[in-house]
Length: 109
Image: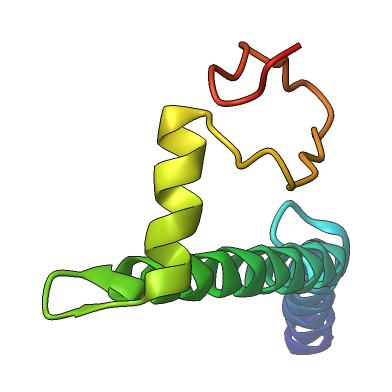
């Protein structure tokens, strides 16, 4: 009789510990919902990385166009006009949002 009671207590304690760890594995601080949040966060960071990588490739391409060993004439013309703020009299200048004209000495009013 005494042995049966001991076995029942040990079984109950083991089941209680198993239940405790199972509950924390699912609902705990590092449980399954946490894993889902980490997966969503990882996907968001992967998307952000893709955008940054795309921007880096575009900048790298523009830099390659103005390297001393291979200067693209169109890129050189675009950069020179942007730096000097000049245009020919027969050209149209399209201002993007936030740009303020500084005056163009090549164009007579």
